[in-house]
Length: 275
Image (tube, rainbow, N blue to C red; front, side, top):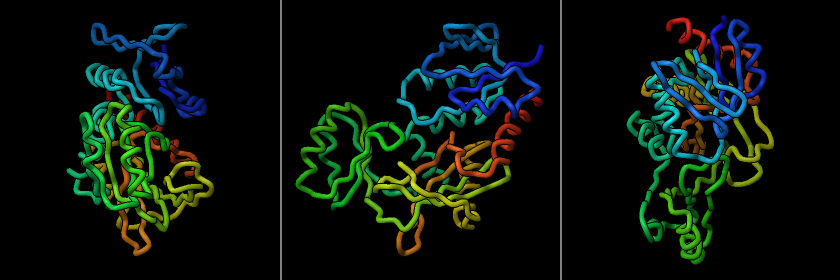
């Protein structure tokens, strides 16, 4: 019987990269998990599947505390996962991701944060500035405050979210650059968006040689986390300076060369063979 690999929230094309495995596709939002006798099982309405490997491709979905627990079950089971479950857990939440990047010594965008009733008002800063609430992705939970007079009403509205908030300066950027590493290889891409939110509603992109400064930052983050795959998103200001917005432990691969997907698959195959 062939080993079973589950692709979580991933594209169907991953099937062709793992011909030696039984590949099943599951959505994290529809799964339950069981760790029993050292075996990890993924359960949905159709079946219960014992797993030998996990390709984690969970992207911009609404965060749920159970997702973190799922990562810890994968980690406890010892089932190979890419990225490793310990890496995914360290970057699962926006605050923990920012803390990891600061500890790695990277040029993280300066920010203030608040948690608790009516604390958000205390974060007002000179306009324009950006407020981000909670751990949402894909541009959700984010607002640009252009007028100081509008801030009290925005703060009142965000109070209903009952979550932490982060306030950052608005960067009038020249370009948005993603630096993406898989193992020892690296690519970079510039992206142009329709509005002020970088990497949301991308209208055009171009694969470029990784700028040396960004390549070094990305390698440092990879070493710090012990990641197989990592994407770092930078804004380049009009004066040429780069600022790190965030790191992505499950980066999107669209627009990058085809061989990148093979490299992602090989990272997991290596981990499964070693086990």
